[in-house]
Structures are given as structure tokens and as C-alpha cells.
Amino acid sequence: MKNKIFILGAFALSFVATSCGEKKASESFTAEETAQQAENIVDPATAPILTLAEASHDFGDVQANNKVETYVKFKNDGKSPLVIRDASATCGCTVPEFPTNPIPVGGTDSIKVQYTAGNMNGKQQKTVTLVTNTVNGHEKFDITANVTGAAASNQTAQEAFGK
Image (cartoon, rainbow, N blue to C red; front, top):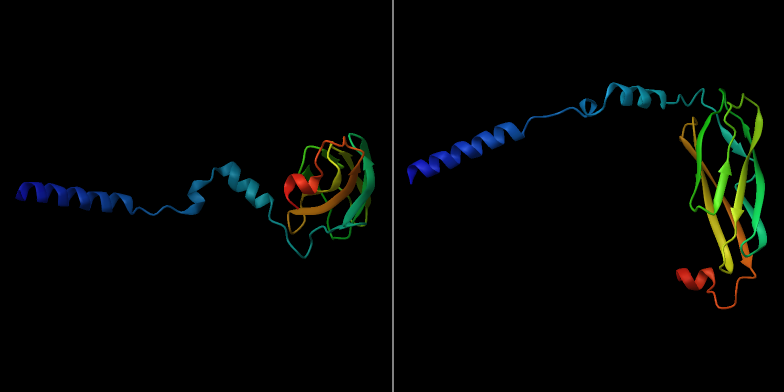
């Protein structure tokens, strides 16, 4: 019995000794990941500032299953070139296209946003997110549309999603 207690105690002691090894968070990243994180650090004093001409765009009434598009204008009001690295939307029905060249200080450009209305009547809202080199690292704006003309047997968006 004493042997079993001794063995169990030795096992517990060795388990505690090996499981308490502290590892630094920086050791969890590869050199490439660390370099990428350093590249994403932005100095607020010299950062670009993306200023949208409109915080949201309303397409108004859009016929079901039709495509509409707009250009959302913006300006770089910061102190260094603005880079948009990526753009995405909350739904595959909304497709943003962004400029790939840096926008100089004081420069303007636009983001093309194409929306394809579904086959469900009612108000729709989608958010476009831009991954940038601004202090936030991302900027957002919304598009809205009131889908009309869907088949009568289809639910409205509010009925389908309980809103």
C-alpha cells in the first residue's frame, strides 16, 4: 500500500513539475507572423484617414433578382498613403471592388459596390468592410435596399428573419 501511495505521489509531483512550464506568447508565432504583425502597426500621428462621402448608401426600391451598383467615394484625409488590402460584405449578394493602388494624401477614389436583390420582399441592409492601413485597421459602410416584386408566395425579409 505504501508503494502505491509513493508511486502515485511521485507521478503527481512529476506531472505538476512538467505542466507548469511557462511559455511566452511571442514564442507562439513564426518569424513571418511576427513580421506581419509589426507591419500592421500604424502610428496614429502619421496614419492615413479614410473619409467616406457617405456612411451608407440607399438603393431605394430594387426589383427582385435585379442587380444595381453604385460607387462610394472616399478621400484620404491622413498624413500617409492609404492602402485598402481587402473588401468584403456580409452577404454574397453584395460585391465590393476596391482600388489596389495606394491613395496619396489628399487623394480621392471610389469603391464599386454591386448588389443583387434576392427573391424576398422587404428592407435589406448589408455591411461592407474594408481592410486598410488606417489606425482602426478596417472601415465599414452600409448599403440598403427595399426589394419589391418578389413572387407573392415568398415571405418578406421581416417574416423570414423575425424582424
